[in-house]
Figure 1 (cartoon, helix red, strand yellow):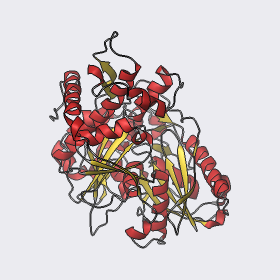
Figure 2 (cartoon, rainbow, N blue to C red):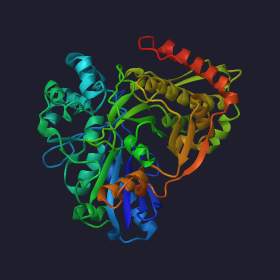
Figure 3 (cartoon, helix red, strand yellow):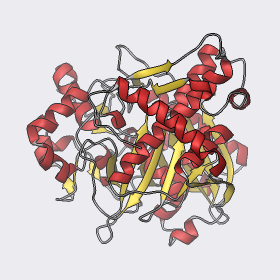
Length: 502
């Protein structure tokens, strides 16, 4: 028996086939082999074609079945993880009406800010735990205002994972956790936020049917099964946004547990049993996948958009793909802690929530042409990413989420010794790396949703720590000094935001 997990990211769609009994991954694949395109028809825009997600999911599914050499009927359930905060709109015939407005798109910021002011900050934060900001609800408001002909045809809006599941099953459904990440969920009423729908003029019929996170959410149609290389009737039994799912994949389900990831964006995600919020919405609170009516669980999410994408940009544009990411880590190690005074602000991937939705852009400061070289540029970039995450961690502490241990998958920027050593030393936290990723977590979620796994212990058989990184007390002062220089540059470039002091 096997479970199949999909992780729909902004760069690729990954699939993982998990042996149900041993909890080990027997095959994995991702498509495309080069990164999926993100279209930017105007500055601050970021769009993708949902059809590309589907085609890449089909290729990844067929690849893992072929790798493992298993019969399609041996796959008993499917789980889906997906890039959060995106918007897909379809008509009554399930035709996609426009490209998806994805998570790093900044166009909806004014629509969210106006709603925040009009509805009242206190009321909005008490009910939504967040400003509408740049999330899915505000993106739908942008479509309504700027593309009225498109909006008039909308039968349902979906998150990216809702769309992928609907292509599989023919059923358009969502989850309460998903609606909370789109800022459609009223935490006090435990239902969609009627007052926000009324403000924007959205009919409640646009919201898909709500299903539990761990439960059957439809079965593969014959047409979809043929395209995926799977058996018709296979149930989809789990769905979650990529960051709640990353936490789930690392067995981070209870208050005080912390997960992190550093792919295109960088995220620190802490679980709480209290419905706390940041008044400036610099970090965001959503329903966690483990939340139940009897025991509410909330995920407090810090996201820095400009993370791995900065490392990728340097490799693609500056180094012309001439070296690997591992080679870049070696190059960076030739520069000292603090990159000899060179400072990088890594915010070049849309409006940053941690900067109160400012789109600051990425920049280097203090470049000395007679002193700095490639090692300093690469090191300053990686340090700048860590410093941005640390800045956000200080905000998380203000809403009651502290961290002593960080769990992460051994992947993406956590493969960089410089990145993980800097993060461990600056925060003082122990970093535990695990043999997992988002697609594997989605497969485990499918097993729980099917009912094959009866509890947390059963679901995480096969999960183990591969590496532990401790803070280097000897270097702590140097990293702290470098962070203070970075913070000074950040404050000089963002004089109108609420400062977060070290």
